Image 1: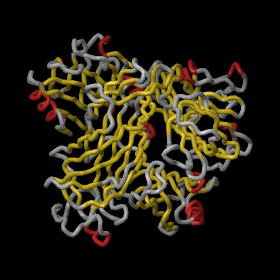
Image 2: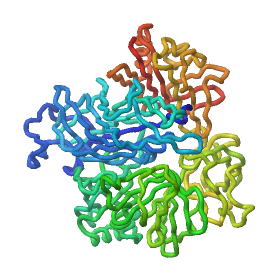
Image 3: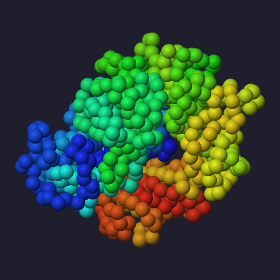
Image 4: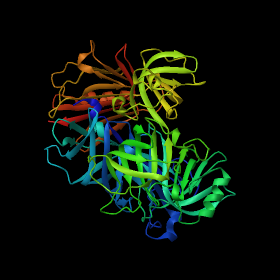
Length: 632
């Protein structure tokens, strides 16, 4: 097993906002947070005396291909021991859908108080967990530390004494809960099914260091064209019935709309939304303004344009194309009639048929229909159509999906590679992966204007236009966001909208020291950093740095690897011991605690760090470091 097969981070973002009440900034209380007698979450007439907690889910990049479980309960506990339920019902979540997004889950009314802990309950019965094994998908079972498959798990949430959550009436606050799968799982891909051993590592942050775009779903309630906003009832993921609270969605003159298969911009989109009427399903993607606590959408889908609203849907990447038949790998199938016997589910390969009547849309492009020729290899897409013969067997042979009278939306696609050459307006790379799937699974036949010009992963050509490339150099890792060239029209093979060079690329370090840990994980600990003992005899199968497309084995390096704090910006340092979780924003305080803790009676089980890695100096400059300890 490699670190690449285990490094998935799940984060639960809890944003405390006045979604329905309006107003409020920051977390500073002007009232005593203990004044809760007049707030009754079951009585709407008292809501002016309450706070509103808006809960969202996100997932950092990793190598679980699918991690779907039911979240059955989420609670917060006050300093005086009261428990508040903040999730009104069970919701089924595939965490791997949220690498680049945070999904808002609920807006729960809660009493003003200081919240110090909580619990998240997961139901693994019927879970769908798949990992990457070479070029293939492999099902995994989640177990406890004794190797017994898990049915249920109640995971404790602990807030730092120095960074607790204060909720006051008519005020807003922000809390992020980070359920880190890299630190929480040991994954063994050798057996069938693979085994993911769970030892939960959950971090709560009032001032989160990771921020992402936000997505929210739910039926339309009202439209206000003058105020340039609309209000929805939150229904997360693919829930068709529940009511998880209210949210106002603000739009701008540049907000892109797709309503019932037609494209609009700005106020024209709001008018189309108003015509569609109350109860129309919607999805909005955008950003949360931290100071003003307002959600503003840059893309809105509504009506039949919402996947699963009136037709089946498939989400995944095109790995091959033959005429009008597209092969989608790592697909999520969303039935329009979601039921117990036909849930949203993972299916490794789906063949989609498109035709002249298939509408094609593209994120960020206001053209109403681009035509099916725009869909090429590697493109991430959402397809709306019909699945004639339903199947829930994830690894069954390819199934057929009919989109000849449906629609396709093309999404921004993510490349990872190393630079071969740089020239004005173009960068050629060795392509390692597309949306975290290995380049070797993609069949580029037919992408070029002639067979000899088909896209070549060994020299994949990215049109960069006027993007700044001054800091990019050959043989270095690179990340590109954009769209593959229309099928049959390469080169270039891809148009980059954003290019991230190796110096700005986030790297991840993961190291473990086995079931019993080690008493001496570091050769030194001090204000200037932690120096790992790369040759420690207790090191287990986790001992890698993921640096862009490169997987670096710590045990093969000539020197010991150092982890140092970055010079500025938000940082978080964590020590886990049993159910205790200690959080620090100051690196010196973190090191002082770690030094006292590693006293010979306590061992280190694992360490993870995220930041920028310098290959030459063998130093990771981190904004987040976590160490898990075992008390002997």
